[in-house]
Length: 486
Image (cartoon, rainbow, N blue to C red; front, side, top):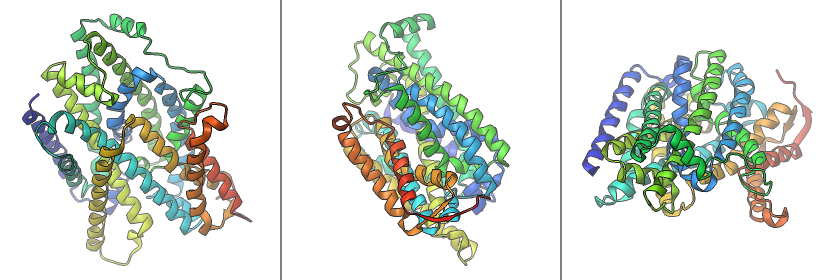
């Protein structure tokens, strides 16, 4: 594909998003931006959340890991399913009962203002790093395969992409994103299915022959039972549960969309529907990965050192322009949900939790200007992060993403667990100490886990350990006074 054609596709896709933004943002106000005026249709939210949850990481990194880890990722995905049920039955009722706009307001009411701001700051750190590394994956692919040959610097590519996202999210916020996510999810899933079919057709395989070829190469092994292995089922499954509870249930971006539904019942229907579809879609991505590795071996294609690049390599260089076009549309569709919702959620968390914007005594116009400034500032931070990742990320992006989550979401997991299951109050001013020390201990344990635990390697279950240490730390700084849950 010519670079001009690729850039034209990116531009046309953006025009479609801009049109949706213009239409949905008419008459938008602060409530539209933060929670969509609580008028979002549950089935639209459920469908759109698929794209937000998958992003470019699933689109390229999950298929790329099949060559070394087979279908081990499904162990985590099965844990995700149970985690979504916990969110629907435990966390969503709490959020709706308290009528929250920012979910971290719960921490203020339960513990105090310092804990409240600590929780929100950990979300801001988590989501900034997580979303920017997702964006980096896609921007880096466009750079390597399209823009490097044109002599365009990576910084310029990142700046243009972030600017495009900024433009269509600036006014409408959640009210816009609910609808753009729906369009982007459709394009991503269509690309997944069509690319799998095109690879099979290129090989001349029927579905049955493709399954046979995959099985011959033992790429579909799903369950691993060696307790010392990072792929051990027990820790992958439990990690999946806690990753979901933390990265979805305690994440303002994901919950902001759920809270935009009319009521709790519709939000729960959204979560149940979304969770089952997500399991199927992840299985489809792993299947695509197996198909790609079979294709690479049959065509004597050298597997890239960064396996995230296998899918774009095959789609853009070996399957013809139609496949390249389909892949590119799917990739762009994976890019935008990675950043648009994150920018909105980060703006919401900072404005509501950190600077208390809704409670300030000022006119609506000034509030809007401040919100715009915060929104723009986070876009700049995203750009700086993806430039940093370009220079420093060498491993699989999904592994990097989940490793970051283990350290940054763990304190949130501990805070909410303690708040919901214990009746003790804490010394509010000491909460930041606990929330900083716990990840540091986890990092130290992770460095020495094989030496200390007879070869056992900590994996994504660092999140669980982190949450447990935070919980115990809060217990140490708790007061004798107890509260009565309302």
